[in-house]
Length: 415
Image (tube, one colour):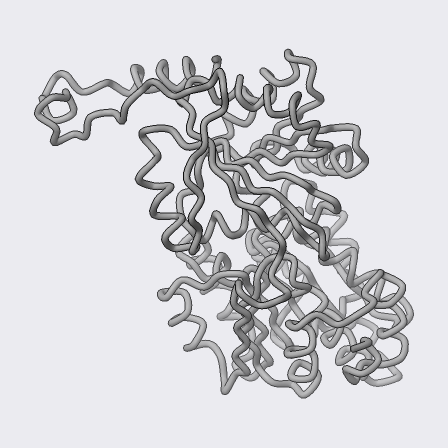
């Protein structure tokens, strides 16, 4: 089905076609009409399914129907909230490109950079604002914009926007929005607790759920490798050399690990860079640009990179550290196999993380048994549990101190 069959204006249908959207995906077919009709929508669809276009194109179409004589200072009519700066830039870039023929003002608001240019950009108002919660609140408190005339609210990565990490910010933002508005919640996953909160915010929504078994699901091959924790960096270097992967996104648990693993890869002759929240916004943007352009072969990232970031032709994702939850595994793995491509998701599993890997597999419907790579056969067993009488975790005075744990972590990462 072509985009022109969805009821979009000719200008937006042409913009979608120019952006490479040749045929409509299932989520777009299901959602676009409802958004155009002004309905609330709650959509759950796998990563890479085209969710951004599913809400953004009809949203822009609705904004384009404003009066032909716009106010001198345009009120904010639509707000897209996302969890990361990178996703702000990605969504805003698409909105600016698609909305340019419609004379729509799109503003991107995010932290990590000076607030002054963003305040200046808002002086004439905006039709659409794409923002992270923290920077939006900062500008609301400075009276640089108002959202009391808001017509459409979008939560992209909605489960993340409604979880406890953003709860306080969300309440302060919601208090400044009108009660009557169109709500569009899009995500790849929805935990039950977050689902209940979303239900309370929506009015007679269209509910769209595309499961993983649909023909549109990404073609991701999932595999696992059994390896001792101290050999993971060496194994990663070995795989990079043997498999000749052109571009790899490696996920780790901490900012410290991102720096250390990237540094070890560079010392081994691999063009690698870390990506985490303590880097400046300029550095984060440059890393992604270099990654996209092929100047960097490996990015070692925290879960900052698991949500929404779209890197074309990403063949491999490596879970150097397993994610904390099955939902996080979905978002991480979804960075590969986008736009119809195939992809590989590789997990490093040690004895201590075997049980967690089995839990992820159960919740994801996966069945890969960890394989063994020659030369990296695991020899370590699982660490004793705190209540294990053979161990020291339950004996006062024998448990490792915080310094001991830091030394152990540094020793593992330096391998």
